[in-house]
Structures are given as structure tokens and as C-alpha cells.
Length: 193
Image (cartoon, rainbow, N blue to C red):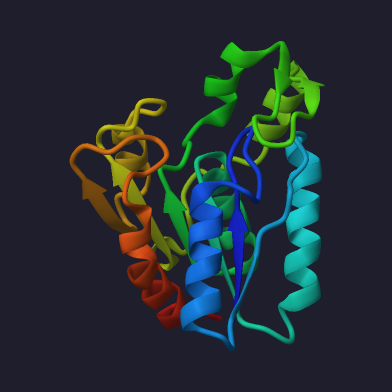
């Protein structure tokens, strides 16, 4: 099985959760693989990157998605487009509304790449909104009430028809993520295409 991990806004393949899940797969499930691409800051380019990867591997591998924050938003779109199971970790529900507050010069914390976040980014994100997931049962959503960036209630309502795991406390980076790797693996394996 091939797990596609989708990092969040201003993040990278070096993020803790991405590396944690990749190491979990490498150590425990040696027949499976975890791929963590470095995504463009431009949503339309990021979705193109991810779609190309999925299309290249869909015929020869079972593909499953894991997305964190903005990556969870992307994973929702791709899950519905390709009928794939996905686990979303503290996902952004309406990134076009959230990121409008960041219109300016930005820097990726991991790569140090500088870019300008513009209204074009916001429009591209708005175009990717999935109004009502067609396959809500193929989505598992992990939320922590202590998320200091996003209001977890928004995702709780948005994904009410999906598998929800809501924890007290925590933060946006999802504290103690490693203890959920087995749960994520089991859910995605059972729901793979």
C-alpha cells in the first residue's frame, strides 16, 4: 500500500507528523511505502503535483491519503476526486477565509523559501472546496480541542458524517500524534480501493 502524506501551509516533508508516520511505516510495515512530497505554495500547482502522483501510482498500488491542516483540505478534495480513503489531522475547513489574513510576503518555516500570498491563492483554494463529501465514510478526522490555530468545531460540523476522533487539549500540531499511527494505518487499510 502507498500512503501519500500531504503537509500543511508553510510546512514540508520534514514536519514531525510526516516523519513520524513515515518511520512507523518503514519500521512496522516494510511492504508498504509512505511518500511525502514538498508542495508548491500555489494551491493549483500543489493539487496538480498530488494528482499526477496519484494517477501514476493508482493502477499498480493501493493509495491512501493523510493530510494535516491545509493538507487535510487538499486530502478531502483528492479523496473525493479519486475515491480514496483519507485521514485528516486538524484540517482547515475554509482556508480561503483563514489565509486572507496572511496576504503578504511569507516564508516557509522549513525550506526558507519566500513567496507572496495573494488573492489568486485565495481564489484557487475556494475553487477546491468540496461542498458535501460523496464518500464521507472514507474519511477519518482527528481533532484536538486545544487547536490554537483553527476552531475544531468547524471541522467537527463539516465532517459529522465521517469517522471523528475528537480529543480534549492538544494543539494544532496534534500532540502525541505517534500513538494514533496504528489507528490511521488500520482505517486506511480497511478502506483502501
